[in-house]
Image (cartoon, rainbow, N blue to C red):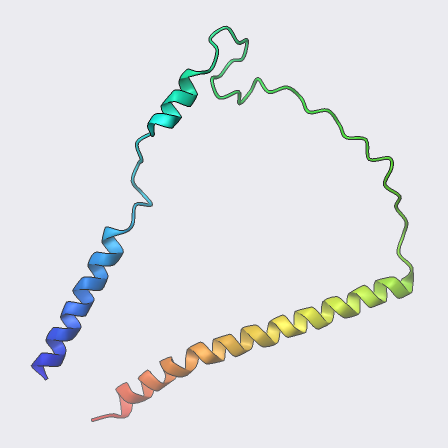
Length: 118
């Protein structure tokens, strides 16, 4: 019994060390030398207000999309699209239900073992 508990504690300690040792989501990272070089190559004579050109960007020209022909869908085309979308949604719902049942079976087994074993 003690051997099993010590193995569990060792495994738990290793898992915690692995999880805590590999996370750096809330730490600041130092800029690399390539990033430093990129920021120093911006010409000083530019008339922009920021070094990252956040507010001094040129306005994009509007694309001419007049060559695209559009038309309204007929009722039959809309019904066909709706039918396909409904079939896809039903398949996705069945897949999500299957996955959730698949994941809940081991949890239910562990609950059964925990409550009804001696």
